[in-house]
Image (cartoon, rainbow, N blue to C red; front, top):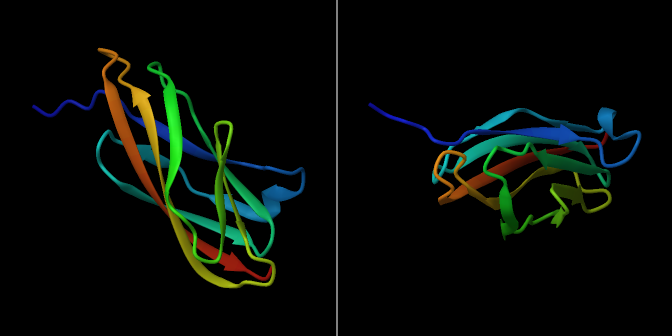
Length: 122
């Protein structure tokens, strides 16, 4: 029997009031110690944020583990925010990891995430 002790959702959140039309991120189900890949679509030069939905175990920390080549990925509180270089259009990607506690037995878990980014002109 396979038992998954923690699963979390990633959701896109606007980082500025007009960001909803310039930022799209699908939902991801995170599994401890399994790297999942998500998709982000963003307008060039506009910020796009991913907020981590809290689990019962809580979040200890987050860190960028692979930087974006054509923009900037950064941690701002509990939001992972990506902004492309102004004028860049094309593909980019970055990775981050969330360190959390298992909701069942409070043991440390790692939740690695790759984000593939499509940057459009509008």
